[in-house]
Image (cartoon, rainbow, N blue to C red):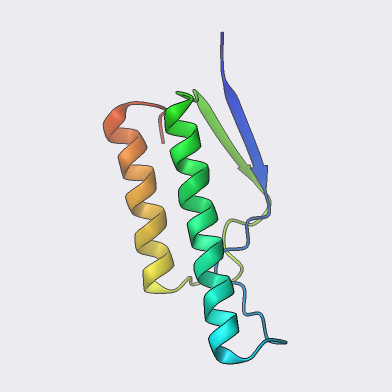
Length: 85
């Protein structure tokens, strides 16, 4: 059976401009953690296809930290041959 996981509009690195700077950074960190949890779930369930529709990032150029998290998580799935990128 083919296992497909679909998520949409993650908007990593959202600015959260209505928050103070410290709270905004905490929220961005929580979004990155949610993405890591999503990827851990995909690996644990041996998902064949991960479909991310909508916006993965909130801006054209994500922060270096967010970029590293995303690349690390995708690479981990590729190394485990859970799904192809």
